[in-house]
Amino acid sequence: MSLFSRFLTPPDPQMRDARGADALDLARIHAASFHRGWGADEFERLLADRVTLAHVLLERPAGAPVGFVLSHMVPPEGEILSIAIAPPARRKGHAGRLLLHHLGRLAALGVSVSHLEVDATNLPALALYRRLGYVEAGRRKGYYREGDQVTDALILRRYF
Image 1 (cartoon, rainbow, N blue to C red):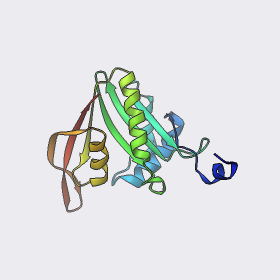
Image 2: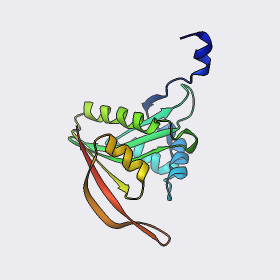
Image 3: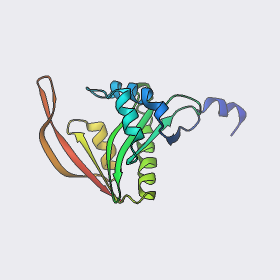
């Protein structure tokens, strides 16, 4: 790689374990991604819980998180509670890389099956999960309500 191309090519995103100091950034990303965002206090509580595993994605090594994934785990099972990418960082493949990293860490800790729940109308998320091997394991009719809009929740499962 030439010196010139090194400046034109953005660095690969980096991932690390989430920590309590990330709570405000995670709340900001979550609020920009979901109808009802979780507060920083909720993230602080989750990140302090010993059954929580969370990772953040950084576009720049010393930058603020632009994405996160958070799971509860009681091996051999894990449940993804939330995954989100900040709007300016979307459509770059970050969610897939972040989720694969996270699943690898779950597997290393003895998790052999991952569960998650997703709005049946969230087609980008469904495409990602299916691409990574998740299959439908159940459905909660009328689970999500936003104003007059009512949608089902799909329960997905992936064995490692």
